[in-house]
Image (cartoon, rainbow, N blue to C red; front, side, top):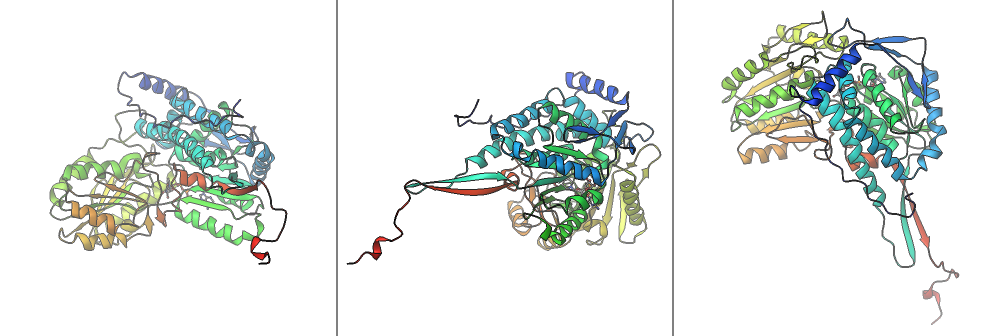
Length: 544
Ligand code: NAD
């Protein structure tokens, strides 16, 4: 079919985000799908070597916003299933890693079109119900961002294969971008269906075989992703999905000699623990495993005295509270100058208190529930502490209720202590902490901000004064891997703002860019000499 052609891949583009206005066809289709998914209880097996695997441990799945409803059950596995998944992956290694890249590209382009086409409603509905997202949050994640990952990654893949060294006269130098020798382990978080989909597939696209363990609270949409991968013709065994506890999977994976790569997104603590385990087992592996991890954030909004108040208020409300603040990029600390504070406070509190919260099936809601009881309990504890502490005042929200689902009102804490715990630690919920500073101390406050938290993921500066923008951009050079000027610190788009941060926020390999895909290949340089010399002696050795 393609053997003798140097083919070009289709130009990547960002999937348009649909609006779901009343009366629109996408809204009707989605509502029908939500009803359909709510009307049945599904059974979700693991998928190992293309086979559906069930166990005797059935775990019920409930929407975080409607705990009395059951969406279905998944089957929980153990160590033996992780071993089977590794064996299944390695058994197809030769076939998959030797598959011409154009065929791999074709599968992933098809996945993108299935996601943005016939499966759009199902994947969005599963994300809304299983992870408690509004339709807009589901659409920008599960439909748009995931399709973007596939289309852009295919383009980046072709750029990588095109990357070749020079050849001097008499030789031909080649670079073969081989997949890693072994299997890749993808460990994914609950909060983005797109990340869950991207982590196992970006190594697979480059010819790797993968064991994928998703979050227990994302199983519902993960099963739809697996259905799509198989529908698109991804061969059995290339990606194997297991539902096991993280430590159990880690024990088998991290001691296996063929463990060749780790693709992670999740919390900093888990990443650091796994990195330590990899280090402790380093002699067991045939190759040094590639470690890619995108982790937590304590993302800031830094406001200058010249900023526009309404712009800041919108950025704070959207940046801090969309998807209940459960984005690694969510604005969770803000520095506001005292000249703007009285008016800004009034508007921010009014808008925050106006937020409607509830079931994502009611499209008038802006927020839904947090993911699970552990998260709910942790967030309510921080809120209770802020009510008691001398240096803090809660100016909006501060209430919570788990009788129907895990609902936490969007909460704003104002603190007099710029090192208060909620200015430093990631809470991963709808809690924004504000420190009001003296308007003339902008530069000192930039330094304070830079030295407050161990993270370096996202951040924003709001100012009209260009000198202030320049100063903030310079001073905060290492404070964020994604830096925004007069915009909220969330909402990165694949192909436009490649995402990731450093410091405690991760290895900054920028998901949705060529940099990430480069981590999943290990190049081989090949030199071919056309007419090899037949005498070891050099001309300088000849007698005069
Ligand atoms: P998490 O760390 O709790 O879980 C991530 C994965 O690790 C899950 O599959 C989980 O089952 C597994 N896991 C949990 N504990 C484990 C352990 N002890 N050993 C092995 N595996 C374990 O994270 P989460 O709550 O699913 O996601 C939220 C976190 O992810 C936040 O910290 C957020 O900032 C981060 N995140 C970062 C990015 C980014 O790009 N930087 C994007 C999304 C989320």
